Amino acid sequence: MTIFLSQMVFLITALAFVYGLKLMAFPKTARLGNFIGAFAMGLAVFFTLLIEKPTNLWPIMATMAFGSIAGVLGAQKVKMTSMPQFVALLNGFGGIASVFVSFAEIQKFSYLSIIGPVFFIVSSWFSIVVGAITFSGSLIAYLKLEELIETKPLFINGQRVLSFFILLISLFSVIYLINNPDDFTGFLITALIAVILGVLLVLPIGGADMPVVISLLNSYSGIAAMAAGFVVKSNLLIIAGSLVGASGIILTKLMCQAMNRSLMNVVFGAFGKSKSFQGLMEEKPMREFLPIDVALLLANAQRVIIVPGYGLAVSQAQRNLRDLGDELKKKNIKVSYAIHPVAGRMPGHMNVLLAEADISYDELFDLDLINNEFENADVAIVVGANDVVNPESRTNKNSPLYGMPILNADKAKTVVVLKRGKGKGFSQVENPLFTLENTGVVFGDAKSSLGKIVQELKAI
Ligand code: NAP
Image (cartoon, rainbow, N blue to C red; front, side, top):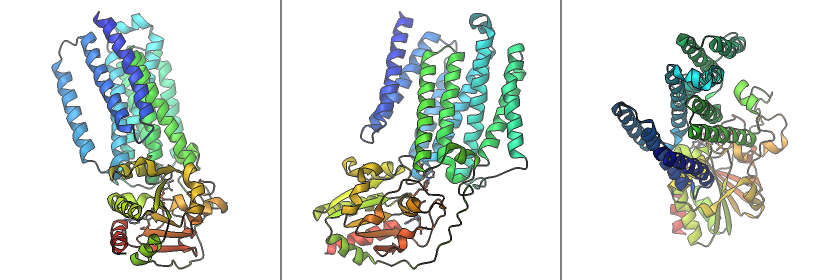
């Protein structure tokens, strides 16, 4: 009865994972989706313990309590801008968990007679290799993003040949393990080799490309968990792992598309090196706007589109941005927020920031939906965005950004840019938008500039 009940619960849990994922695709329902997924996972753990009946429950309970407390405290403490490295750590833990699950199962040799050694050994080997690569690769991604090691691409002499050689050893180790299934040391060495491979694969990738790499490693952690599911014969783990693996790879693909880069270019080519663009442009002066100039412009506008970017996250100005939006709406000015898929430094970065400030989802528009609207906008306010509004990506074939879909902020009647100085964006490419005749720049930290504009607007 318990087994039948558990299987039913596992089926419902699997459906809940799929439904939770679906809900996570929309900002409005993402929290509910996350809750449903977490709740389903809790149920799955509970019923697994119920049918497996471990002889000593205490170490499991203690580990779960430790993990849960660390997870809650970590998630509460981590700053929004540090979310990618937090996710990297979680991926790494997922990878190493799959390695440990396989290690534990390999030591129960009774399995060999039940499932047949080859399938069992290949699944274990796969879970160990992918899990160990995910673990070490994610740790390197974390260290790079926390700037605890050099964030620039790091190459060792003969790096590619070495990685290729190690990859071959990892692949061929499966043949040895199939023939020597009781050689536990062989599995340990395989894991160690995969750890080295993970380090070698991620070290040559620049820190700024890490979000894409993290999304890829997220997919690997799912694939490792799926393989571990075959090892322990858990359908639910196979389903959960496949969902993570598939969604991670879809996210990676979408991010690469939005940056107009191939995955190969992200993983094997340091950004900007692939094209000969030097970023040398005739230095034109930027026209300066004072907060009062912007307030007067806005007071006379009917349609305003706000383009948030990475600088909004740096200055944590999301609440001040909402104040500006509220003030504009009080004056019956139509306000929309244009969201570029790779604005900021992680997927959904701008959605999360704006949601934190309680800006209504109905006012947020994706690139495809808003781009034609810029022509009708009186003012486009670019808050700490740069690459995602660089018009050269449409025209300059030598630019590393060429072909990347951008927000058409330059097509608005007037463009107001909030930035601190002459700083470039992630791509280190000059942006001619800032020197166009219809553009004015308010220099300073976005939070302080927005505050001043709101004050001036209130006074009008
Ligand atoms: P961006 O191109 O990196 O530009 C950020 C701009 O913000 C800079 O021009 C900077 O100029 C300004 N800024 C920084 N701090 C500021 C502050 N405190 N106050 C006001 N302005 C500030 O940002 P983006 O337009 O959002 O583009 C994102 C880039 O990251 C894209 O190239 C994308 O491909 C890349 N990327 C995104 C992801 C992702 O998942 N979203 C992942 C990897 C890479 P000043 O220094 O002059 O202030």
